[in-house]
Image (cartoon, rainbow, N blue to C red; front, side):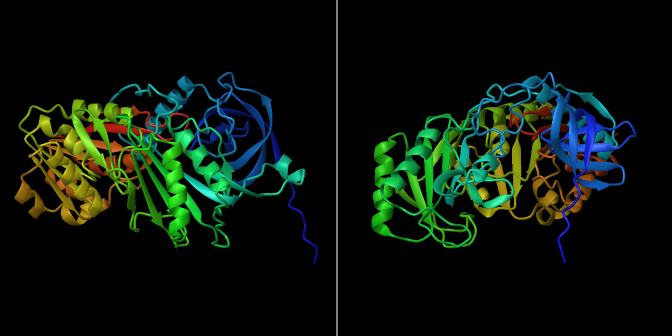
Length: 470
């Protein structure tokens, strides 16, 4: 039986009017059908190639651009549109901020169905380039090829070091210069590739599970310290030492160099022994008056300078008087808890990841902070009436959950605790809106403040102040 080629459906002249929550362009046809289109920008008029069609909406990609948006700008990175990151480089920053604000408002109104007392304008990033303190690159013997390269017969088998191409798990986009992380990030990556080639080391093949070099992770702090972790597939002491020694020689800016051996099928290394090869095995970063020790397995805000703005907004919303008992849920390594400790009586932090709690305790000790208490475990299991009786009712409760938001049991427990104020920090306005709807049984949302932590992406942080209804 012959395979029938699926008929290509093109729908013409669709005006794009906004951006959906995942960064897709959104528009509407004359007959009311909603279109979600990858890479389309507000102000574009496009012909859409349909990928998926359901009742009331269409998902598609750009077939042709009939009219270009006035908000389009020239991307500054040679890898734009290929590596899959920084997808809004072609949209001016002011417009990015406008639609990020819109997405927060729409989520709270559409999903949360709540009244917002005051919607404060989004806090922009001062640095829209070189703002990340952490990046990870992957070694591969297969390079991602664009269609023109494939058509010309170029071989995909080339040793490269770069980012995973979305949708192509075993092929890597070779990166020559990345605008996400400051120096010496690009220098380290380029030497880590050239040294490996000069020494004849094999780059990893994810499909066949072969090759010596797997990944390299970089942390660069605002204090001028640089941590590097190199992941090898198997141990070869001589080859490993030759590579690491040459990397230290070529890039003396590396303040601590670590490595691990990862024989697993996946790239996850936090369950492995990470060995210090040179330096102290950690770097230091500063947020406000607190200096954090960041080790190879530490969880830390990816954008240091914007994290300070975010935490300052938490302080502003909490309006501390100095005598408050504060709960900090999903505290991580205690970044918010330690940041606010000097402004209140006590902070009680809860975090599921035990290693992060150990970091929090150590950082409290290093900074001579004595009014914090930290617990490791699932928030829904630890935060109980008995816990509140032991530590006292919170005057202010801060919650900063992962993208999935709070467990329903946690939200219901917050309703029982009846803290006078809740400051809810979220990286996902949709799940935040869902949780605020639950809390609206007893709480009013007084004000919200979006903070742009990741320019040129659809990601957005949002801080909400809730007050107990009298």
